[in-house]
Image (cartoon, rainbow, N blue to C red):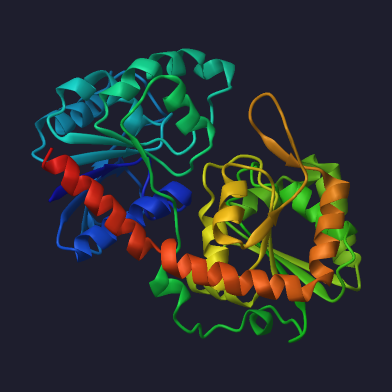
Length: 390
């Protein structure tokens, strides 16, 4: 098959959606298919092919809804003229999906939508966008959702969409089943018995870093270290003087005899090793669709605590690998950990090593059976083949 995956940005950009598209695209190549990723220009990307995946670049700024510039029109023309069997659009509310909506019924290839959550569904500025989506959504040959109960799939059901299915996110066997060579505690200058708390997420302001620092500081953890891994950590650090509470919590952790904290953009090899060597993963994120990091916890035998964000409740149920922190939600769909209740939840989880060990073993077995990218790619391949022959 010839497959096109359309996504706002791609490697060397990193993030949840980029990771999904990279995992699927490279595995489709290994299965013998031709894959083209249509994505935004990146100045550090000096190649047009990566691990067998062809990359078609468009210099498109922001997230336009209508094609006006030469590059925006070129993207639409590319989709209209391609001889691909299937085109999949990953994530709504971004240019690679937006610019295709007005021409969906003219594209010859089979069209798949993976909307990944509709994060702006409740935002006033997207009111007309989602009003229009009630019509556009019927132009896809299949709509793939990551959850059975989240705002995007519920929107589809409420608007009479029948072409829908669920394919979850996952974690890669070739990353999490191999033996890592990095000793995280040694790399960070920590004692072998240091209790490790891990968070992985870009410093966007929506991943719960401020809540996490406060929860960690006020917790009962002793001889403990918090590792926060993600992109744009420099902005987080530089912005500290603008946020007195963040700065105070950080300084108090630095002065604590029992706690240490680290934040940086570590390598992927270090990150995987941290997953496998940490004791608890804590994720008080504010907005998600279906957080890959929770599947990676299951793959790494790492029990998690997460806010009720995206479909974290489902993932906890599917994998049996974690618990949900007490959470408040606002009218825009953002989730916020209840600080005092979350401190108690972390203290309890910290003190119950047997519970954590049982969760780790159970979730790992379930992940290996159902939620590896190797198996998920085959589900997408089956869908694509069915659409191709329909």
